[in-house]
Length: 239
Image 1 (cartoon, helix red, strand yellow):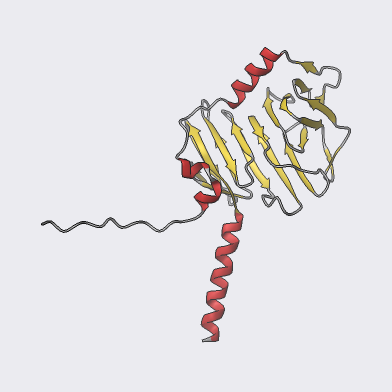
Image 2 (cartoon, one colour):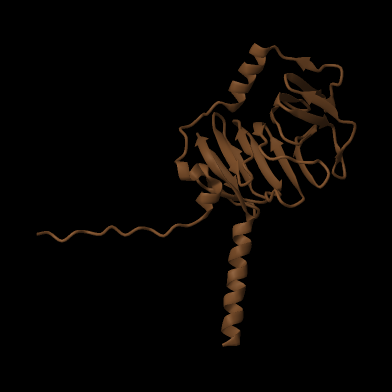
């Protein structure tokens, strides 16, 4: 009996751990999108697919995906891109680090607040790193050694590399401004201020929906993660 209770306890613990690893879902997608698991295997993505720490969302040419995280953060992954969820702290009541690696382009909508001390958010590209506390911005890689950052709301800190969890010599990119890396180095003298029309156009281009909205239950991550019992249809007897 004790052995059976131990087995059931281990199964329950494993199930709880598996649920805790789920940090988001694919909320919308268009074109050829796949998910790369931690073990290196690739599977075709579908709307409502759950995502765990360490997995990557990969889009082909002409494809895109919207990823909704458990803490309400949103990633709009552009075509020919890879978004890797390297580490993710989705519990807003606890301290922790979130690190995202990006190859290609993506727009990011940060809904939760980070104090940049106990809780941090870092987005890494091949040539730069961005840190935020709560904002909306986009990242676009324009070839080898070139990455463009545009801020739509709040402030983004952009630097060339991390020293521990700190960004070395960061530049503050405020709302309406854009900065880029050239040949692998941050162009500190080339920060550009966008007009309201340019900013609106850039934001709409980065955040525009490429696919039909997912079902409502798939837009609510927490609800989607809960399995509901299937309702059996009851047939009324014929009179």
